[in-house]
Length: 109
Image 1 (cartoon, rainbow, N blue to C red):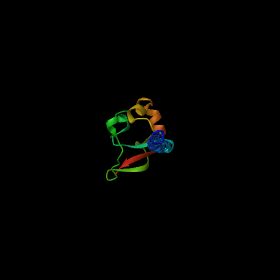
Image 2 (cartoon, rainbow, N blue to C red):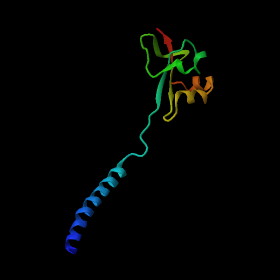
Image 3 (cartoon, rainbow, N blue to C red):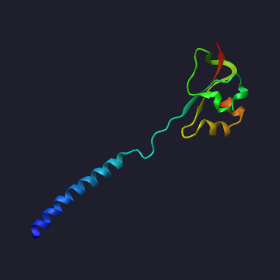
């Protein structure tokens, strides 16, 4: 009877230990903080007076209407740091700061 009880315990104990080891191993290699990336936003407003308007920005660029890399005053794109929304970025920066930190300017085609 005692031998049978030991065998039953081993049949339960071994799978539990293997499962526990598998769970520990999987969680040890799981990235607790997923990698985040900065987001590029393109300005689609008509002039810089609309910089603070969230709807004046897009993550896609219309290259049929605009040409980035110009030496004009109108913004082309900005880079919003990872973990920050466009709205919080715009609210925490003045127009002058946004213009100064812009990655490039644009001209209309």
